[in-house]
Length: 258
Image (cartoon, rainbow, N blue to C red):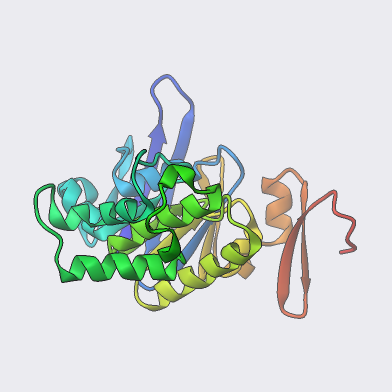
């Protein structure tokens, strides 16, 4: 599993960002990470990736300390879709997706049938095959987001971390993404996705709610997304509606009866 044990982190001369976070991501599980701005969601992903080192605690990957793995070995196991780029200028969509195979190839190895199959599969499931020859810089924000997701999937990772993956996506592609993440988890990939919209988190199997750098609640999405918890964490600015086995989260200004 990919595991955070008592993670603490703070930037130099800055405030504490995380304090004692415990988290476990197992293959075959989809975990949604929720919380307000500044609660530590993106920093947590950076620590799980090894892009940052914790000031205390540790991250373990498949039973070993994360820093004991080489960057290439981590890249073969963990893929990442950041919230906003960066993306390589001047490349076509397919060339960008092929970059996902670098952890498996190194800089000088030639692609083989396995690499070709991984790229084709990633572009098919993200509905980007029709964009293959178009420059990435010429794509819309939503198209670019889907290509960058395809690049992450081309790694064929054991764990997939996504920071606001529904950014720039229209309603059709939001729904398609949520279905895809469910399929990936069912196929054995450990998925952790940060969402600002808690309604998207309802599709996941597990959820954690961060508040002030700590885990405020953890469990199934239905257990975590409650009126009491969200009124506390979001200063009373949201309402959680339940009925007929469904949950909806709305901003407080929405004129809907609870």
